[in-house]
Amino acid sequence: MVPANALDAATQIIDAAEARGVRLRLLGGLAFKRLCPSSMDARYYRENKDIDLMGRRQDSRNIVKIMETLGYKPRELFNKLNMGQRLIYYDMENSRRVDLFLDEFVMCHKFDFKENILAGTYTLPITQLLMTKLQVVEKTEKEYKDLVVAFHDYDVTSGGAGIKGDEIADLCSKDWGVYTTFWKSLEALKAWTEANEVPEREIVLERVQKLMSAMETAPKSFGWKMRARVGERTRWYELPDSDSDAVFH
Image (cartoon, rainbow, N blue to C red):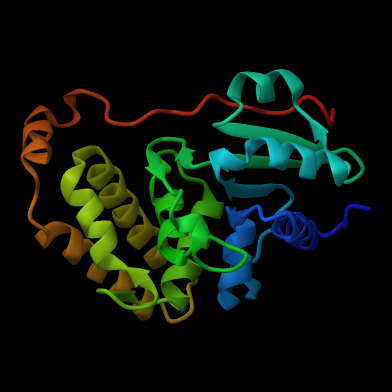
């Protein structure tokens, strides 16, 4: 039986996969709820109805068996067309959707998280979770809340635990598009933090600035500099298609 609570349901899926030798890790709002104690603060709390998971492409067929054994209904045509890239399932009883990304997280930008799936326990590492929120071009309040709790609960470090600023800066130094989206997201996050009732906002703003400084000072690649010449005259990101489900309506 699928648990009614989304985090319990996600844990059930991950444990069932682990028992079969398949590694799945949470991303999205539930991952922040699991990793960040501040997410339970009433000022940041938000409902997390759906489940987002990261898996490995090589495990696609086993993932299909696991989801169907647990009672999830496949989005059949989508799954056939996207096998090896992304899978969608439904928990009909709880009106819940489960998105499974395989190897790569693809939204406004594309990131290869295959190796990161091997780290951590139930979630992707906080650094990669942060990247999935910073890459969102058209942000809503939920992105800002997830970003704030991440920066509140984890310091920006170089080679240590927490948010790995050196890793993000290295990625941004090679890709002008990712750098630009991340930079704009961090600027917007600072403005949102200053405009809202954020506890200990000085800590959040200090850590955001620490990451921006690391991104700014990292030596840029030749490809980065060439793309920077074109600048914003050419769009550097994708806008994912709106994918509202009619299955529950």
